[in-house]
Length: 122
Image: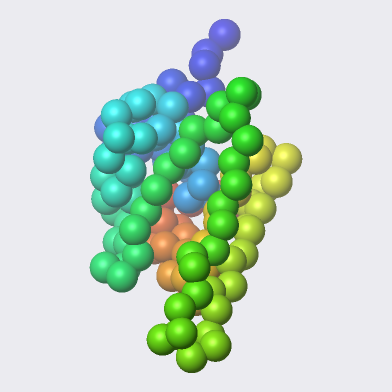
């Protein structure tokens, strides 16, 4: 029986998958990507906007995760960061946590992946 991770991972990363699946397959096949998560999108041909950082966390069964907003400052002029949680294929547990303003960048990264042929057949 073939391992789905091996079957879908190629030299340039998984093909025929959506962006979230491809990133997951890369992280599973190359644990070093959790040390340098910015390398994962680059290996898939995806550009992360310079103003954003890219982080990957592999869920652990013994850990609770709490993502909190930054401390608001008086300089913000009452403008607060609105965090969103984007469940993508929620049955497979892909979760993005991002500021509302970064949603467009995430959609653009998904589109880049589809356009480069990574999401063929989707």
